[in-house]
Amino acid sequence: QAHVVQSGGGLVQPGGSLRLSCVVSGSFYSISHMAWYRQIPGTQREMVASVSDEGLMLHALSVRGRFTISKDNAQNSTFLQMNDLKSEDTGVYYCRIRYRRAPTSTLEFAWGQGTQVTVSS
Image 1 (cartoon, helix red, strand yellow):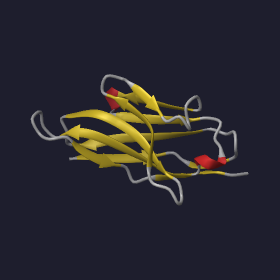
Image 2: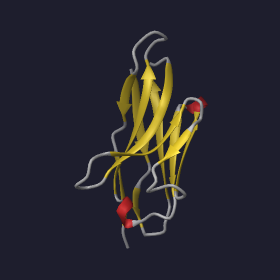
Image 3: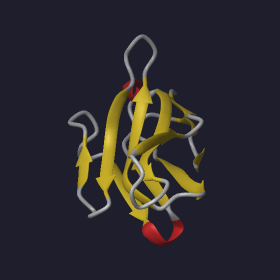
């Protein structure tokens, strides 16, 4: 099965930048979708950005123009560049992938361990 490991995050001042990374390892046939979610205290987990296997990128309205998702197919990785961070971006960020273990197997999801992003002066 696929294993998702995240890195990045931390404490940054308002207006600052952070970059999150997500690397997929283990046994899998293909990854069809990669996304970043976040969970802000007191709210439900929400999708921040996603990228399909064809390279179609989507960004939530709340982060559009500030966050950018990208991926590296050769490295089975996705990244979230976060610029002009605001206090309301504070939360735990998760990477999620959709993948197949084999050509005819069903689609499955795997989550990263989560990483804290804190925007504060």
